[in-house]
Structure formats: C-alpha cells, structure tokens
Length: 330
Image (tube, rainbow, N blue to C red; front, side, top):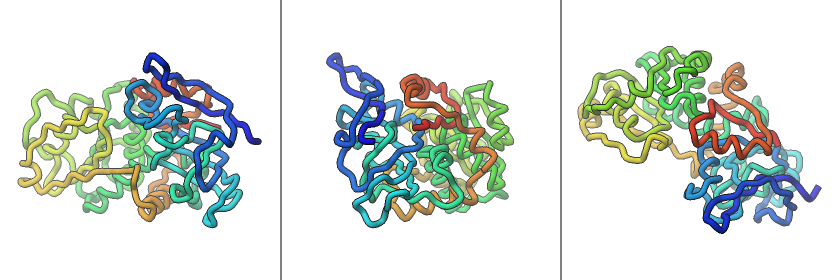
C-alpha cells in the first residue's frame, strides 16, 4: 500500500486555510528514519490552531496536522526499531513543521519515538496523547515539590479539557482531594465521575478583584489556563504550595505579584511537553502505564472519530465545545 488518506491543511490565495482529506503517497512524506502505520491519533487545542488562519502554529504549508500518533512500525532504517514494533510519537515538530498524525502513515525521526510500554494499548496511548502526557508531567512535578495527598486540596483549572480531565482522574486515583473548576455547569457529573470532590465555577478562580495575597485554599494546583486564573491560584496557594502551569487558554499575561512567593514560599513550575528530554519522556509514559493509569476512567474521558469528522472537531475544540479527549481512529 503506497497510497493512503490524510487530512491536509493549506494556505489559500485569500490567506485563509483549507482543510480536506487527500490521497497521498509515501513519496509525499517528509524524510524520517521510521515509517509508521498510524492506528490512532488525537485532537488537541494546538491541532485546532494548526488548522486555522493566523493560528501561528504551522511553520510551512501544506501540512498534515496532528501532534500525536500511535501505531506499528512498517519500515525502519534505525536499528532501535523493527517492523511490527508498537510505538508512540508526540510533540517535537510533529504536525507543526513535519507531517503529523492525521494520516494513515507517518515517517518520523527515530529520536522522536517512544516504544509502547507494557500494560497500555495503542488506543489508550492516544486517549492520553499530549494532553495526558502534560497532565502526568504536571502531577509528577507536584509530587516532586512535595505536595502529598495529606497536605490538602489540589485544584485543577479548566477541568473539562484534555489536560484538566486527565489531571483530575490521575490525582484522584493517587488519593488526592481534588477541586475541579469549570465554566460548564452541565459537566459537574462528568467531573465527579473522574473523582473530583469539589466543583468550582470559573468565577471562583477568576474573581473580578485580584488580591496580591488571598485566603490559603489549595496545597497545589494543575493549571492549563494561565492568565488571571493563574494569578488568583498563586495568591491562594497554601504555605509551601506549588502550581504546575501548562497552558494559556486564559491569556498570556499573569497579573501577579511577588508577595505569595516571598511570604508563603510557593513554587510556580512550568510544564513543557514539546521538548521534554527522552529519558524523562519514557519515565512519564511508564507512569501512565502503571500507577497513573485509571483503567475505568480512560473510556469515560474519550470519544472516537474518523478522519472525515476532523474538520468539524477542530473547530469545536477551539470553541471550547470538546469534553475530555477525542481519539482519531485511522
């Protein structure tokens, strides 16, 4: 099979972006050490931006988006991988400057590839994808900062999104008392299913009047939102608390002060899933296949679509209309 289907995005003459399913051949693929028969991909906020005009994500058009993929090695010129190996590829330049996971085949550098760990399937790997990987990194960083279940409540902002949903499930599975914030009243039952003990409105974590130092409420926090929400979280952390920030859906400017840092000794730690070193990357995937894995919760978080459904779903994720994780079955 030298021809296959892929979602292609391309700049149009009026500076918009077209999105269509095309038939490609292996000759259309960029250079890479390993050819992967893609079984699953997933939809992330970054993928939605890659498929929109002025998204400032794609470096060069035309492009096959999709920053995540899992599949089986078809061919390899690198001795680390052989035909039939099950593998995961997330982040790096995938779907941004290198054809990504929204295609039945992908050709990638061997240095980007993680062997599929035991106790996890190709589908489960994409229920996680970059969002689950980012959530796991966030949880691990909180643990490394000494935030334990007995220390108090851990807040998760943007809790119905991909990172948020995964973080709620992981923290709950580890025994933490989780407070989840969301602007969607209809999703309270969903968050309770994932293990949230408290549900907060968006307004409760983004008050009109931000205080430099507010009431101590949370031992730690996972924040994929940023902006004013992050500023309030910082002001409300308990003494020696920590927040792991990974996103900017609430904006890039954080109107915070130095006071909670020097008066309460708090920690703000950044989470980068794109350039995470390979040893750390493998450590995270091993945790996702073991103690961070909530078998019963993965399917609760996931829904499945096909390539044909992608254009609509990419619009929906930008509009905040996607709950949890959307898996693309190739």
